[in-house]
Amino acid sequence: MTTAPHCPGNLDLGLSWHNSFVQLGEDFYIHLSPQPLPAPYWVGQSRLLARELGLHPSWLASPELLQAVSGNRPIAGTQPLASVYSGHQFGQWAGQLGDGRAILLGETSSGMELQLKGAGRTPYSRMGDGRAVLRSSIREFLCSEAMQGLGIPTSRALCVTGSDLAVRRETIETAAVVTRVAPSFVRFGHFEHFSYNGQPAQLKALADYVIDRFYPECRSSDKFDRNPYAALLEAVSERTAKMVAQWQAVGFCHGVMNTDNMSMLGLTIDYGPFQFLDAFNPDHICNHSDTEDRYAFNKQPNIAYWNLFCLGQALLPLIGEQQLAIAALQSYKTVFPAAFDKQMRAKLGFTEPPSGTAPTDRALIDDILQLLARNRVDYTLFWRRLSHSSAGTDTALVRDLFLDRPALDAWLLRYAERLAPTPRPRVADLMLKTNPKFVLRNHLGELAIKAAKLKDFSEVNTLLTLLESPFEEHPGFEAYADFPPAWASSIEISCSS
Image: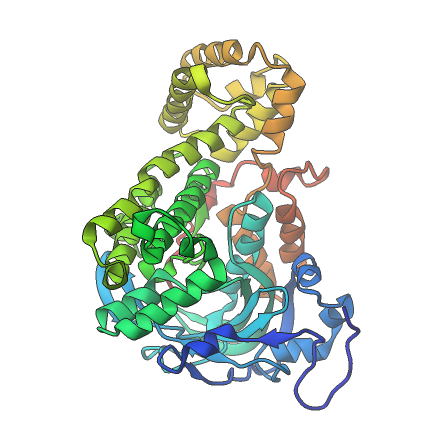
């Protein structure tokens, strides 16, 4: 770590920068600089992520860093660029897309890439202004770090800066920039772009880049006739399956699972119209723009597979044989249900391997999810209250959540019988480390945004603290883990940002 120097030219953060993506060549990107954001101000900062990146704490208070992450001052060693990709949006081929408002700065010696989202128009903006608005930027910042706190693979967010610059969406809003962080922002859509455009050399160069940097084991895999590209498809399928299983277990709706929003590393990326479920409704659609209900909560696992199938089609020129591609996709169908069962068993406090208890466990999982749906029970509250009740025999707070209490009581009896051989403290410990007390509910985000529009960022900071460690009790902040207010159900979240 270094202290923050004062330098008149490019800002030296004391980090070692390079940009391996540049080596792919100019068919993959265009070099350009961020557009300045007038009179920027700090909205939120992740000190935890800053430490992980090796940034000295003094930088977070410096006006120099504020200017740099707002696009107003170059950072020494970076090579800013916007990448081109294509993709399927809402199930339809959308053609060329690309980083329409995101500019990749480069990667640090920690192996993490930094990207400025909202840094202005690029050649891929498609008539857009290249800006992000304060509302969506705060949501992405908080949810990125919330997912990290939950242990779900995700891109991260170092900070958000705002400006009074007017931006037109449905109404006039103000602009903001999110500094996003991930090992890579390569998407399924990058591969679709070169495959659909008949550019096999570029397609191969991109696949080799991803394999060599992130999946070197695919080079030595004996599967698929030692075909590294089929092995890559299988590896991405399995990572994606595990990620989506975690989404489903925690009640997370992504909202816009287009192929250009799917990470080749199995990370949750592109936080737009997301939502954590309040009342459990498997058919819930969180995206107001999703008029055909394509991305409903219970459809996410199948949509992920559909997207992987699109990736398989894109990789087919490299894989060579269709049957190899199909075989590489098959593991999704076994990995997802196994990963989901593992997540749900942990939520229920089942500490031992399933073995002979598997049918009983599966029935308990299916039955409680059906009960939660029929009674529209608050998803996060149920699991947290069940975690506390598992330490003893008092289920009153759990029963209070249900209208059909006889059905719940019958389930609780079966559940208690299943837990009987395991010491209750051990069960409770696992459940309290698995079932969060705090998630980024829509109404909490809305309250933080409302305050931030008045230049009050205290709610952003409070939520960040709670969401970075969502399994802790955080005494005094019980209101943030309570039922949503009645007005929460009227919040509409769309693709507009």
